[in-house]
Image (tube, rainbow, N blue to C red; front, side, top):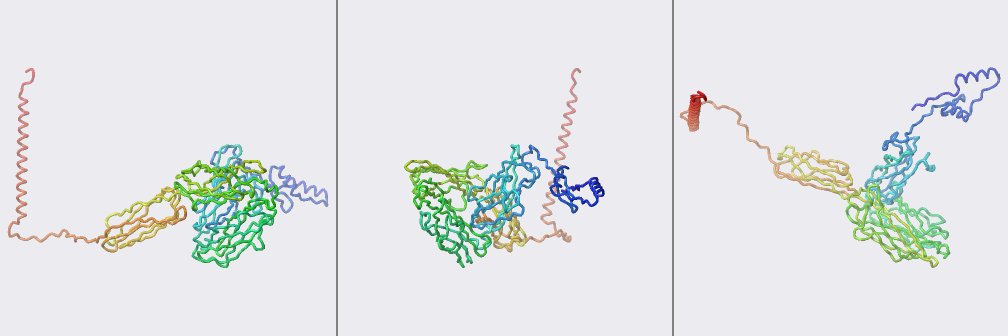
Length: 627
């Protein structure tokens, strides 16, 4: 919008100043300062814009935006209220990698007052949450300034993992934001599209590097004690990965540091289909103040756009000196690891969830532990998982200091749940003894499990229209439908066979959304007489990134187009017959008999008509009543 600029000094003001200058020779008119100009513009009910070369203030008319006190729900005033920060760099993630990805959200309009801001992040196929933070609350107005951005920015942080077989490409990540205007109870929803670049297994074999395991050389690491960290790095691809650097991060002198060694190991090459074990000598600080310490493992190599990262958790006993403060610390239970059998579970198919729980205390035994597993409800479901053949609660008699236990439960995912990540909450209630007194404790942990729906892509029977003639095109049709709840990706249809050719033997369809259907039509030509056999192939990627092929066979017989020649309408030359042919005699006989029958029919009809007429006349001869 063009702003109307008005010069500070009106003609009258300018004339007055000029008169003062003429009346007082040698007196210079001093230009106004910026503060004076701002004050002047404010008195005029306008906004200060700038000072011109002569020191005059340039004011602009104030632009106001009227915000209705009670706008209609689902109807933003000026389109979207929120947007991604301009110039925001698209984040990247490698196949098989887990990392925290940030989405900076700002206001798209200058004067909007909102409250109750909540964002729901939806991930496409191939990505899932490894922590349940797909729904978050935020407030742009109250955010602290971030040096990376200008102005108020709300940073949405999502803990995202990419499946090990994720394909390369940039995917859309819809962020549904729900908010209210101040003083209005009607929620409004809008969607901001963010993007993530996936470096998949198909882009470079080096991107298939995996951190398969890590471990410590002892179960109980004490403050001030040296220990070794072992890391296993795997290259499952068919090509060697060169110039591999493995780095341990988040090291400090107050927590954990390297023990006479550097924090990075270099491998000139990691051969194809091989695993390398690396050992890092470390030492825990004597002054460590937290039992649980997190280290960051980072791997780089030629061909990898961004580092492959993983988090390592070390449990350090703070009671190396037997101090009373350490001995009196309350124990805590954490989930050391959990496994559900793959990258995602399938709706309607039970699975085993295995978890390992650890007592982080170095000197206190946890007793009479009760664990309760409960599915976390979302906006659509009351929870996606239910136990199949057992209770959702378990009892454990005790867990020793720094000890761990394993527990499994069989769960059934909802068959009609939307494909996404769902949370499970594990609540712990336990007892412990400090200074001879029995204490009670409780804590809660939460994990996230991605759910997919079973593949229900169905292909109908092949329809062939009419007979197949050699050298002529014949049409083949086949229908397909995606009855599943997940989108199938990169659908490609092809036809092949014997004694036949097709003008377009391959067709790329792309993605087929849930509930969508269509048909495939192709014309084939038989090469020669005889059997024609073929099959139509449907190749696509399911929700888990696996390639699926569905085949439909067809067969028919090809025939030649051999027709008898048309005799035409030629009339033969008349010839003098030597005698009446048999067919002529028969024809004459038929005509004669037909004529006799026709004459007889006419005579009989006339006689009947005459008889009826005579009867009618005889009725007229009877005397009428009264004669």
